[in-house]
Length: 581
Ligand SMILES: *[C@@H]1O[C@H](CO)[C@@H](O)[C@H](O)[C@H]1NC(C)=O
Ligand SMILES: *[C@@H]1O[C@H](CO)[C@@H](O)[C@H](O)[C@H]1NC(C)=O
Ligand SMILES: *[C@@H]1O[C@H](CO)[C@@H](O)[C@H](O)[C@H]1NC(C)=O
Ligand SMILES: *[C@@H]1O[C@H](CO)[C@@H](O)[C@H](O)[C@H]1NC(C)=O
Ligand SMILES: *[C@@H]1O[C@H](CO)[C@@H](O)[C@H](O)[C@H]1NC(C)=O
Ligand SMILES: *[C@@H]1O[C@H](CO)[C@@H](O)[C@H](O)[C@H]1NC(C)=O
Ligand SMILES: *[C@@H]1O[C@H](CO)[C@@H](O)[C@H](O)[C@H]1NC(C)=O
Ligand SMILES: *[C@@H]1O[C@H](CO)[C@@H](O)[C@H](O)[C@H]1NC(C)=O
Ligand SMILES: [Cu+2]
Image: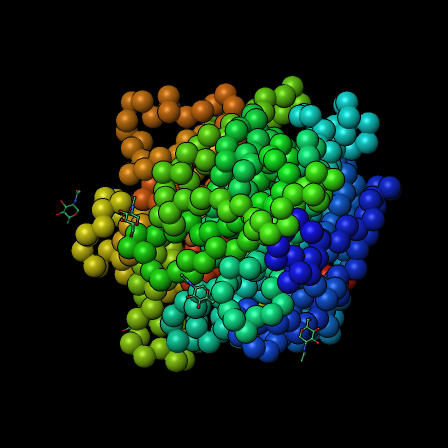
């Protein structure tokens, strides 16, 4: 055995669902409670999981397939499932965010999601979109090119010898639904994760003497083969640096959009994002650590979990088997937690792979929005019964703190044209007050915010929207990973400080040639990003921070996209078995 400590290991590789032969890919997701061992503490904890494992089952499809997923909720909680990054063209009812597109599937009930994955390929994922359940209710959703698409497997890069899913997560020694409710009722945010995980396992660096069962993921490789790593950040609240000792990567896609090949030895990935990276097994045969540590963009920095989580990459060649058995794995050098330079370098180095079939950037803009994003303070809500100081941190976009409606989903209200009491159409295009957004020493009064509300921005069908996302520094500087449902957007520019629209060089700063397409943009800490998308899919599409702790306190808004002129572009009716509130 080439790695000395492997006797301690039981490795669980992600299970591979049967390869889709037909155009319909069908799965049954049984959601129920599961007992799993605590990290660094004795005993087990009860969590919610799909089909008895964390992460849950991987869905494999080909572009153009139809997915049919029966969700059977045998858990004590209400649940919904979101298909993160799937466009849901013509199927807005299947998107999944609770109270935006659907009422939750109640405990003891079931619901079947049906939608096609068309016009997109790459690495996506699915996760619960209700409460904080996605900490354990998540899994990969891999869309491969359709059969016969181009040479090889249809990839616009050399076909890899093998593919490996690498799901990054956060683990709590507790039930995150309970922990969230406790924290929110006291007006505080949930405590930090107890561990980070790779494919559900924390690795061997948590240094707990009582831990005899070290749980660590293992990736077996053969010398000179090339692996496509499908890396997904499923963590609730933490961005990661990702490395493999002795190896480098060629990034070929992000958020299921192909990129120009980008060579790097570190991958930076915010919650909600995915990165596809080729890794050649070209090191000398042996054992190497794969490792993740947190990227802490916040300044001033709150306490965070500074641990490194590990997996192991093991060469299984004959040569490796004869190498020194006492050798422990080689460890990579990870960036400092506050290494914003490395994060920015990675995020801004990605550009789209220009292909004839690819969408091009829309050049004429119909709707321009300038949206501030950040934290502020407010009074406790009546539901926050345990608040002691009657002050709580809230999160806002253009000074509006978002709250989900409680009686009916927003999409049903849109469909029936009965928004009264559910949402209002006054999400502002501009911040109400123009100020020095990235100044950290502004008067306290600016950071106070009103009560949460449910505001949408209504868009005409096919409108081209440009949005400047401007992070604020009222409470602290921080990078917010902003996720848009229903669409990819082009990332035209990003930078630090205040976005200066009046700058004559403004338009020239925009990449209108080969900007990366994403569904989640990590807006630089103390900075801004410019995105553009075409609203050609009617429905209710949430845009929110993918840090769950921020979404819970209001960091979101919703686009209401109107029907188009033809029957095919009209908002379809809800499925007959749609969950009711
Ligand atoms: C703890 O979790 C492990 C892994 O799921 C399981 O095998 C074991 O039965 C659980 N122990 C208890 C006491 O529930
Ligand atoms: C590492 O994780 C353990 C267990 O959750 C925690 O007690 C410890 O504080 C963490 N270490 C650091 C440096 O954050
Ligand atoms: C990062 O943190 C270290 C240690 O706290 C500090 O010395 C350094 O100045 C910080 N770097 C940046 C870029 O903030
Ligand atoms: C908190 O402050 C607000 C505004 O002054 C007030 O309306 C509310 O009643 C207060 N809540 C509690 C629990 O004191
Ligand atoms: C930040 O705002 C404060 C208060 O308005 C002001 O005194 C200070 O000069 C500003 N800082 C910068 C760098 O503009
Ligand atoms: C936000 O709105 C509150 C009132 O609800 C106001 O007092 C505050 O100045 C506003 N802040 C900003 C930054 O617009
Ligand atoms: C949508 O807009 C594009 C140009 O922006 C136009 O070519 C297309 O015809 C429009 N589609 C519909 C259905 O209006
Ligand atoms: C679950 O959903 C139902 C229907 O929307 C609602 O009445 C109930 O309060 C929810 N339960 C919990 C625990 O949130
Ligand atoms: Cu955020």
